[in-house]
Length: 150
Length: 150
Image (cartoon, rainbow over all chains, first blue to last red; front, top):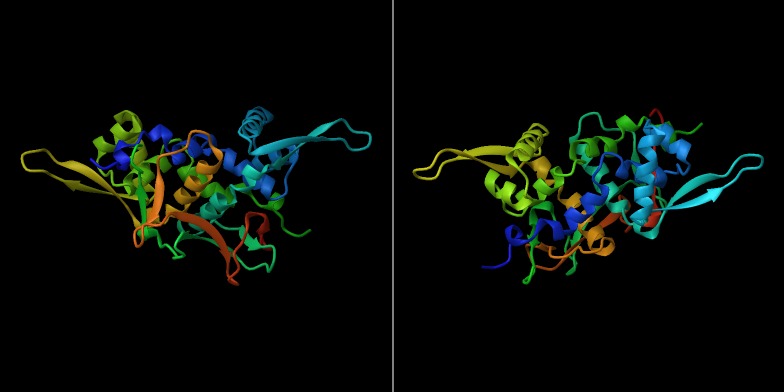
């Protein structure tokens, strides 16, 4: 029997692994906010309207997962505070966020108010799929393969 | 003050809206399985290793959200059963799954066993971002804008 999705252990799938890191209600929204320029604990808590008790373990989890890095800073006369920045791995979540924006704008009522732009020319950004042979890949031309041995 | 992410109501953001529909532990995995050819309740429950009690409300939620559609079928001599297919809106989640695969394969230990291929030429598929002016957009050249009035 050829390997198919049904024979693949769901726990070894890269989607399962990614979703288990990112698929709670807050992680991707925290990543969006850090990408959008909010770096401090209080800014994040205030924009996301969540308590310190909810935000704090999620930030720690994203640091543990190598998605955010924490750096301390201190303003004159103030106490030390933490700032969060995307790591290289965190920066590579950008296409996932861009795909969520594309889909949300088209398919979810009430979505608005956010636009992805190319820093170079300020034109709107969209997500597309391409194959190694150089073809553009429409959604209907994607197939999920499970290589032999999995 | 120009509009920035900090001034945008998080609840109106398309990422928030998408995540609130898709950001539980199971929804994207169900979509992956249906895309991968598992259409029946029992196939899905068995592959995801979840109980009927967990799967059933999630399938209903994905039908309500317009992502899956339910069709009944009956094999000779058997009782009627339900099959689930992606709607057009569900099909358009494909780039989100593809972006999760790309990221998971690169950044999450233990990811393996699944490959996205172009049905036309069987070459591997990856996700890329492009702008309306025709430029390829690297992750570091994406910016989040909030249009005036939001």
